[in-house]
Amino acid sequence: MESEISTSARTRLATIARHMSPSNCCSTSHHGGIRIEGRVRDALMAGKPVVALESTIISHGMPYPQNFQVAKEVESIVQQSGVTPATIAIIDGIPCIGLMEHELEKLAQLGPQCVKTSRRNIAYVMAKKLTGATTVSGTMFLASKVGIHVFVTGGIGGVHRHGETTMDVSADLTELGRTAVTVVCAGVKSILDIPRTLEYLETQGVTVIGYGTDEFPAFFTPQSGCQAPCRADTPEECATIIGENLKVGLQSGILIGVPIPSQDAAMADAVESAIQSSLMETKAKHITGAEVTPYILMRVNELTGGASLSANIALIRNNALVGSQIAVALADKLA
Ligand code: PSU
Ligand code: MN
Image (cartoon, rainbow, N blue to C red):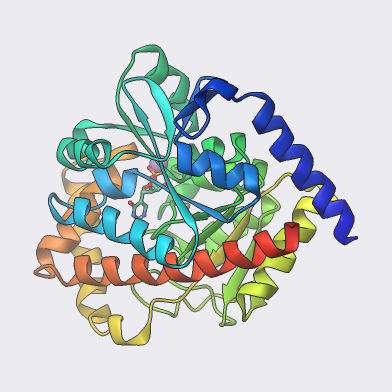
């Protein structure tokens, strides 16, 4: 069984290697129109652990300059865990796996002027040579193209409240259904309809795991009132599940919900009431579609005097740590 995993890992690495120009050894290279930073490419080819990071969280999820600081800090947490970080974005039309510091800063400064890029507009952003910050769905797609199995973020999109009539269901959920990447997150915000989000993930065939908990976490709080369908308590357990997913070739994703550390969840009540007020504002102001999530994130931060931002940053740090441990355990398994 172990050797079947190794074979698939070797095939993947060989495929990537074939697409890489030997003249680009030790520097950035290109693979099917995708730019892979040298350190990321070297790690992938050596079968060393790599963690993908998204960029919408930087451009649309947090204000400048905290977003730039957090982006760098998360990369360094991953690095200190012995894992190569690969922040993913589209820079001037080129999908990039791993960014230079000045590119991270550009995304952070541009903020919402970057194009929020999910699967639906990857080709458009490339064709128009735009700069796109990739969402969970866009990042998963690009990560899978280069053989990255683990991706860390804060929270994912879901079924919006009243989604049964608006049909506002995040493309993150369908991507999880069709792309074999594991997303490590703090669950789904209560701005969304959490029970329907879990139903939809079931329909999509996504393996949903509570990390050290029986409950699916709700981003700012460890509790959502919803059972997580599966539970894993250690990075090794998660890595075993990921290994089986790859081995049997499910070609669908895994969602690991890591509860926010309890000391950081203290402001939960204030955050919850801010969520309620900003939800009402989106209705009054007729804010819809892709603009809903960024608007609510911004308003909740204003209304809580920055407390939601601190909690957000704390949970991303924690996810980076857990995700890196999972990536290390997985690399051992695939070796
Ligand atoms: N949830 C958060 N923070 C975020 C996002 C979601 O708590 O930054 C971002 C992610 O990039 C996610 C995207 O993939 O919003 C989902 O947007 P939508 O609901 O439009 O699909
Ligand atoms: Mn939407």
